[in-house]
Length: 487
Image (cartoon, rainbow, N blue to C red; front, side, top):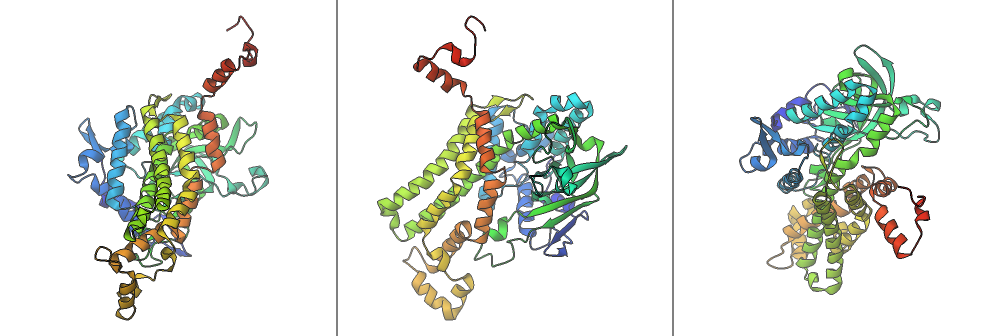
């Protein structure tokens, strides 16, 4: 089944408890802080019903039309179809959004790979995985991830500080488990449900822990409360900040105040081995769309920088072209890692087609760690006008607008209004509060840099380089730890 935008909006009008700026939000679909991003998500749903897009955003199986985004990948075409679908969406909406469901569904696919591990502890949990994967797929659910806890004092075990700093089980009932705690999550206010799991293992040598819990939480469940950060949307004119006013994906502190997770929604409980396995494999699929989004960020930087150079003829300078080439190398590096990770994809334990993990995680490091430097290059190419240009009202008022028209018009090709729009776009992309927020988000949304590097270390096969050097250097077999004459 594929939902419509109206289906999605109606699903959000469920009485959920959301707070922003000290006031309770009555309806996220109409609130000025949420409406723009809700409209973007609704647009994605509606695109799947339009003749121009339907065959590329959906497919038919067993007489049911389903979304390409949620289809578990089993062959290369499944991935290339997803890439094409994302391209259609990003070009239609004219910007970049990260949390719209197609990336967080990858964390659920990782559960497919872990179902046998979960079944070791309780067969019901593995069955729950199967059912929820199908439920998200069949009902086109906007599914997100509840991942990051309030930090607290990490030098102390949870039991020695306020226990609610990390989500934990406080009671078992016949109906399910009751949890307390909180998570930070992007898009929770306008999503249907979240996959909750521990951020880190809050245990050491424990076999069982009340903090090792994972399952599905409805965003309208009793006891779920959300306190959202202030939105960038609505603060300023959309003419001056076109990206912030359309694509701000609001984060929430999602509080679980004695929330019941029914047994049928539990994926793992108390068994630290199960929780550790799920954490270790969480991003094996979701890292792909996360890195893929950076390809479009790179395109926006290249486009904004190139247009700014072309309008004044600076694109003819060698020094400018070298900086543009740096942006292109960044962009193509992302593209190369994504393309290669699918071309050399691997079969997962659950029978899915998993992007080549070493290439994918290396691509994530390339995309995330180099983004600050690339933004600075793009900022240099756009120049200081992105921080000194007056706002749209000044351009449109006769008293000031006539002067601005004089000084911002370059020629018949570049009149003042087009230059103003380009500079406003570049400012919001590179220099605004929203730009800084997005940069920080990219650096930490899938764990900090050292965790990214750890993922690369764990995914890379060191046996090739080790064997190459052992033979080239003439080292004996003893260095491998093997005894001569044994296997």
